[in-house]
Structures are given as C-alpha cells and as structure tokens.
Image (cartoon, rainbow, N blue to C red; front, side):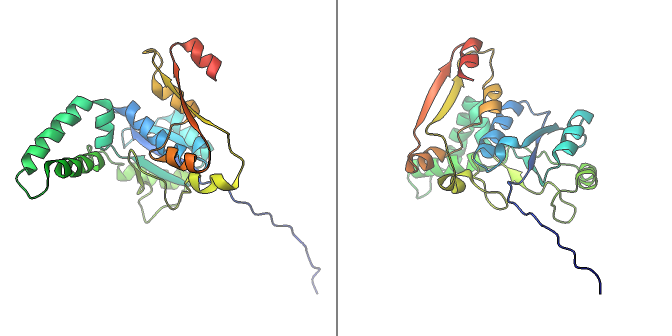
Amino acid sequence: MEDLVFKTVHASVRPARIAVLVDESDADWQIMCRGAIEFLSGTWGGEHALIVPTDGRVITPTFWSQLEAFDPDYIWRYGKSGRDIRRSRPDEFAAVLEREVAAYSGGTDSQESLRKWVEEQLEGGSWSNWHVAPELEKQLKDRLAPFFVQDLVSHHSIVAGQKPDYPLTPIATILPFCSRPEMLTTIKSTDRGVPQLWIEAVTGSMPTGFMDSLQTMGIPHRDVESNTVADLVTLF
C-alpha cells in the first residue's frame, strides 16, 4: 500500500487581467484611450489593466514585453464610436446629427423624439472599420494563451460609455461588500500643457452613470480643477 500524501491546495479569487488594443494610427487615439480608461475604471481590477497601441497588424517589441509580463486573461479591442467623435470633435458630430435628423424628418415621431433616437444611434454606432488582422490574432494566441473563442482572441470590444459585463465584474457590484473611500474626487486639467489623458491614466475616470451608484452607497463626489503642473503635484 502506498503511503498517503497530504497536500494543501490554496484557492483565491482575483479580478481578470485585461489588455485593451487601441488603434495607434487614429487621430483621436487620446480620446479613445480615455474611453478605455473610463470603462476600466468601472471594472473590478481595471486599475491594473494594460492599454496597448497597435495598427492591427504589428505590436512593437516594447509592448510585446509588457504583454508577456502582464499575461492577460482577456485581450479586448477598443471600437471607435460616435461618442468618441462627440468628445473630440463636437461640431462635426452636431453637423452629422442635423443632417441625419433632416433625412429622417417627415415621419410620425415628434421632432424631439426623432432627434433623441438619431442621437443615440449615432453615439452608439461604429465610426471606424479598424480590426485586428488574423496574423496578429495568431501571435496573441500563441505567445500569450489568453481565453479565446476559436481563433478570435480579441472578439470582445469596448466602446465609449459601455458598462462592464460578463466575464468582467462591475466595481459597483463589489463596492458594498468591501472597504471603500469616503469620497470620490475627479481631477480636471485646465492647463493645455497637461492632457487630461495623463491625469486619468493615474486617477482613473468616472464611468457613465457611476455617480448615481456612488450616491446610493453614500459616497459623495467632487470635481477639482488643476490649473498648473504644481497643482497636480499637490493633488497627487
């Protein structure tokens, strides 16, 4: 009879590790990164996620090394939508909205309800055909071995204003059951030399509709403006 061997097995729950691919050639890449940060800020573990620039075919050696060290569970891509255009070029979005409303006019809906419907369609609609090439999908699968469906490693897509859902966990779901700050502060830069992206890369960003969840849990929110780099140093 063989000797019995006792082993201790330890199991724990951790947030999913997420890497987000962003189109580096898009002129609105900063706005798109901010959209990704906003989504990740509402996700459990999103603070430690990785945003990776790529043209959809090649990832630079620097970011390959970061990806391999990070070892993501999921690789998502950021899809540019009308919300990004509205944030980066509001005049252009407004012009498209007026044109589309005029094209749909003449129906039975009131002008107000028609405008709201067209606005929602434009905000949620795709404004780019950017995708991850099959050869890069294969490299991601072979070198990182993330969770994937068939050969589509980056089949998940993030768009501005999207709320986290399975297989991720919204942070609002776990906040009532863990220690949390007494107040949430949002820092906005008025200094042209300090892009808002720099700030949000450190502090995170307020996800759409998240303020209502915080108020329900008794967590107040305040906005703080930063006029100079010195202000930022003091705040951080």
